[in-house]
Length: 456
Image (cartoon, rainbow, N blue to C red):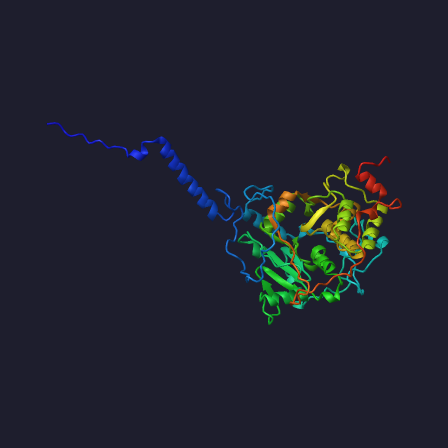
């Protein structure tokens, strides 16, 4: 009697290769979709390169709405136009650089004195006499000819920042405080975060209960809030914001690197990685984004007039006429390694050294003399100063990768809530680009060269 043979039959649904492949595809697609959903950067199999702090740094009340009105871009979050080194190696390198003070000398010498104005209001002839400082033997005017009006505890905290400082400013309650994301685990040990505000902005923070009114020192997330008694400085809030933007090396005299970030921006990459990638590895004094549309200074001046970014046509015209008369030229390949004359100055990264400090001082003086539209004086100062600035003007795609841009606060007419009052220069006649086309204009040769019509 023979043994019975047991035959294992394949289930019918597995006998079809097409069905098996379909099931494999389905489960793979479901897994990838789930991974994409839970991944913090929404990228497949791509982890963060910089050891981030994942937990939120601060929870805002819903009424504050810090993430409203984001400006859309076409950035691809899963590819990067800028390369970053490993976070821990970068943190150690930046830390060692900050400890090595000899790497940041010689420092610039500043004009001292007591005047009625913060910057001195020097004439153009006086200002341009300071553009050549190759021997480092000139006392350069650089603000602070009148005391910068902040509290003693804030001043001590600013002087105690001896590594990297990230600075911002909100005057006239024009923006919201935005917390950086993607900070590495060692960053807060090396980096200070300061945002300068005026009383109107402070009242808005009280209104949203972001800070207690009883505390003399304010902090929101990583940001230390510094109240500036701005009525003792300039009447224009934008000009008051220029002080921490360009004189950050003087407000933080012991810092070695700085990042200025307009309050409309939110950092999405660790500041140590940014300093290392855009400044240190490029051996640059300063890094700043190219303007997304304009290459020539006059293009920006025309846009400033056309879109009413500055209301005083006389000041704007006088500024451009002065620069054209004293050698301002449109951008050409002969200006290399400078790749454009117009930056997007919402984000500025600096190593605090002789050249970057001199540039910042000289440009601040031009802004005080004319108006706070810093893109208009940028190329003139950069091209005329000596020693020459080593500048990394990075592409717009890099800018969009490392920050998120938001719209400014919307103010309702008649809204009398604390922090909503408009303050600014008195409106005067508006400008149009036709003001720069007059035959007697000193900028005629500039314009003809820019348009390719010059025969000289």
